[in-house]
Amino acid sequence: MITISNKAKNRITELKKESHFDENYFLRVWVESGGCSGLSYKLDFDNQNKPGDEVFADGGVKVVTDKRSVLYLFGTELDFSDGLNGKGFSFNNPNASRTCSCGESFAV
Image (cartoon, one colour):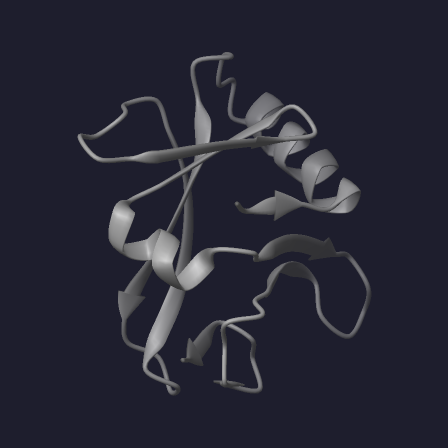
């Protein structure tokens, strides 16, 4: 399961409204090779399910990921910070053995 903090939920809701996405759009989260630690987090809005997708819902936010990525993301919390020292989404991933200083890539 992937969980969403209240701050992340609020920001996702704002972004959907700003982009004029209807209720058919959801947050797609996945992991791909790359970044300074080996694996990178990716986020985007989508409205098409793919075969084998895993679907989660937390706080009214629908999150979809592929089967490969869920192995890396299980138990992860998506958070959002709007502070001066780190504005943006961040992943609190208990599976990561190390992360880069920017927080956008990790290793297991």
